[in-house]
Structure formats: C-alpha cells, structure tokens
Length: 564
Image 1 (tube, one colour):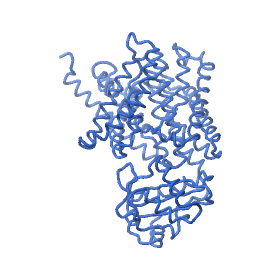
Image 2 (spheres, rainbow, N blue to C red):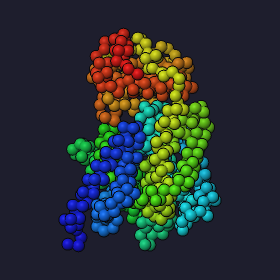
Image 3 (cartoon, rainbow, N blue to C red):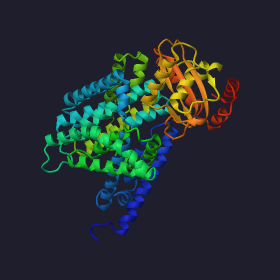
Image 4 (cartoon, one colour):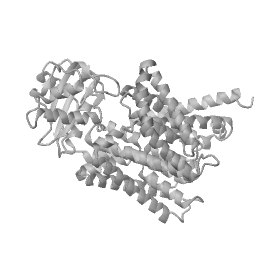
C-alpha cells in the first residue's frame, strides 16, 4: 500500500532508531564521566554511524541502515524534527524572564555587550574579509553575514546552566548574572534568526511574502509572551486539579508546543521557534512545579535530544568537509567576541575584572543552540558543508572550555570551607519553622548583629524570590550579599519534618544553610556554595548530619568523614 512503510522498511527503521539511540546515550554517558557535555558524545555517535566512519568502512551497511533517500529517510527526518521541536520546548522553559528584570542593570549590560560586540565582529569578518573566499559559496553575502553575526553572538542556555550546575555556581549571584544574560541572548538571537529564515523564505508558503512573515513572527512572540502566558498561568491549576499527575500537564505542554511549532512553520519560519516561545511562556508560570519541569526535561533530554544530535552526524562526512583554517577562524572570532563583549558588559555594570572575566568565560558556550542554528542554515543553503562543520567544532570547543576557564579564573590558593564561617551560636539543630520564609527569619536571628535582623531576612527572601535555592537531596542554601559585612557569616539549621524550598527533585529541605557574604566580595559566596554542595553530595554523610544534636557533634562528624 503506497502510504505505508513495508514490513522490511519498518524493521530497518526500528533497527536504525535502536542503534542510533543506544550509541548516542552510551557515548553521551561516557562524555559525562569525563566532565564533558553529553551532546559531544551524541554528535560523535552520529559521526561514527554516518558517512564519516561507517559510510567509509562499509558503504553498503550504512546505506541499508541509514539510507539518504526514500521512505525510511523521510520517517527519520520527521522523527528528528519532532525531537528538536521538543528539545527547544525544554530550552524555552529554562528562560525565566523575571530573573532578568530582578537581576537588573548588570545582566542587561552583559547581554547587550555580549550580543553587540560579537555580532559586529562576526558580521564585519564575514562581509568584508570572507567575501572573496570559497567558504561563502554561491549564496547571498548579506544573508550569510547576518547569519554569521547571529552564530557568533548566541549563547546556549541549557549548556551554560549545566556548566554552572557542575561548578556548583548555578544559584550564586554570578550564576544569576550569567543565566540572565544568556536568557536575553537566546530570545534576541532566535528572534533575529527567525526573521532571517523568513528573509530567505525557508518553509514559507507560496504567497507568504517576507514582510508578512516578519509581522506574524513578531505578533506570535508578543502574543504568546503576554496573553498566551496569562492563559497558560490560568489553565495550569485546572489541569493539575482535574487530571492525573504528571500526565495531564505533560500532554498539555507537548500538544501546545507542537501546535505552536506547526503555526510558526506555516508562517514561514522554522517550527522550533514556535515551541521555544511557547516553552518560555509555559516556564514562566509559577504553577509549573520544579518536579514537573525535571520530568519533562529528563523525558526529552534522555530520549529525543540524543536522537536529534546523533542524526546531525548522518548529514555529511565530517572528515572530508573539515577545514582546519576555517575552524580556527570561526573559533577565534567566537571566543574573542563573546569574552570581550560579556566581560566588558559586566565591568561596566560594576563587577571587578576577575568576576567580569568569569562572566565572559561562562557566556562563551555556543553548544547545542549554535549547532541547531548551523544545521538550519546548512539545510536552508545559507552556508556550505565546510562552514557547518566549523560551526559544530566551534560549538563543541566553546562548551568544553567554558567550565575549566571559569574555574581557573575564580580559583584561590586556599579553598574556603563553609565551616570556617560557622559558629555554635548560628547552629540550630531543630528548626521550628514550617515554611522557607520563616526558616530564613529564624536563621537570621542567630546571626551576630551586623545589620538589622529583619533587613537581613528581607534581603535573603528577595534573593530567594528571584530563584529558589533548593539544590535537591534535602539541601537548601538561601543566601544574599549584605552591606557592612567584612567577612562571610553562616547559619546552619536542621529541620526534622523538612521545608519546601522548591528543589528540582521535589524533596523538602532538611539541611538549610543561610549564607551571608560581604557586598563587595565577588568570589566568597561562590567558593562557600561549592564547598557546601561538595560536602553534602554524599548521601551517607547527609543522613548522619540529620541525626546530630549539637554543633560539636556536627564538627566532629565532618572532620571524620571529609577526605578532601
């Protein structure tokens, strides 16, 4: 029957999916063991199974399992399109616009400089220096230069967030600045690229003119982030009250994301823009619990994302299209522009040079967003295969170097221990509070008088409202920078019943550490947070800590258990 896959085609299709997913997940896990982004292993899986390796060693086997044309190729392309649409839904959910507004001037300056300088540098190099080279191909020079500007200025929010989590910096003040700036980068970058796709007519219907596409794109984004966001916020409680959890919310999110993707594909831009903007609107609702977010993230990131990123390696031969000179040029422009722009923005915003360079280093990750951008440009004919490979190499290298570079910049000769700033007076083995604001106030009352107790509690609570400080594993670290402090002060509390700090794993916090650091100290908070996260990553130690009765028992336990 003409409209269906034959039995043999179904067998090959399912076998191809099994091989692709298994290899991508295995290599992704391997990369994580070496503290590298899992996307690196997933792309490597596609390179091994694609024309680069398998296609060279056994052309017949490669053509049988991963045909370039025909029904199976069409089916795989459809599945990977769904995969990237869902991946951008999760990426959009990471965008918390309220963080940007609350973080204020510094984050906006980092984003403004971090977009403008790389974009100007990228456009200038592409338009004036590369115009007569073979790398441009026969495409439109202006379109290519505009794409190159976007590719050099965009940041990968999911990769940046993962890097900060690995360094235990995600919920720190520096981490908030980097995340806020990356949020703005993502929004502006994808808006601009959506318009760029409209200009080249990618996916547009026959009579859909560019101006209509641009107006509909802007109208969709504005409508979804205003009226759409309001509707989602009102609908979510009803769904949670009348459907089984988490199935009801998952079905609603996926169906609405696919519908949004269909709309943006119809108006002439790529489907991923629709799911991304819907993800932003969905993620902004306070009714969407962290545990629900985590379930959606795992469901999509462990299944669909590996399939998509592995499929990239099936697109072309990475060896024959590898141009080392082009890769070095693209990499140098990306690193120079992003570090210079973001660091300058942080410095203008009031950061020390050390913190500014750490922010710049955190912003260089192009990662998965750059790869997606490059693939769409390649499929649309804006760039050739060599430039696409250079973009992929640049995205991978910047993601790999961001974390180590931040760590080196922030490193001090003597590691700070959180116990160095804790005293018996500030140790509360039995918190009476039942909610997080009361817990913050109770711990604040134990702090030696450097400021009004209520003002300290208010400052910490305002910081808590920006982004919940529940780290998971029954640990929470509410914190703030306090004017007048000359050195960090900590208060430590244990809650027998647990207090909800909105942790990603949904667990209540039983170990709560209040961290107050001097307003002018850019690094102390980061080192203390890192030490706390490192110390309580051991489940056995956490269980023992919850059973201590006083400060002396606590210190004795830590000294006997610590090995670093």
